[in-house]
Image (cartoon, rainbow, N blue to C red; front, side, top):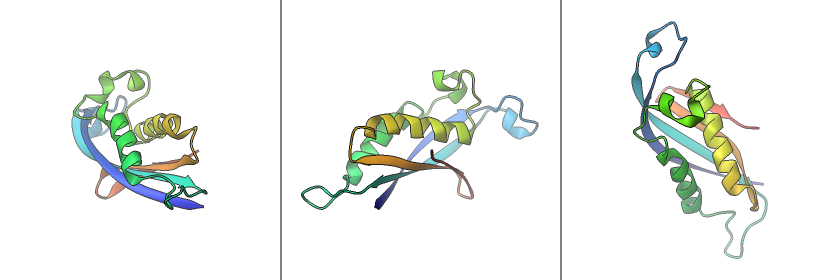
Length: 122
């Protein structure tokens, strides 16, 4: 089994409804998204999947979130746009993209700050 990891970044703002601290106010983050893809088979040139393809698919997902107020977006109309829910959303969207290929999304690690991250996998 091979595991490929790549990272993309985006910026957005959110509020956390029901939070008792300062996160209840609008604030922003420069998010880093680590994507882990796994696969067993190599193609004819010896790759599971090109890193460029993983980043392209990830960028299509995060471009919907980039420079947006996340609370106004449909995926977070009922769920708070916490790091946990954002990571699950990205995982789900990328899994749709890679579901019919030799690869699968293993996990998403979403960095909210340089010192705080959440991982999501199924």
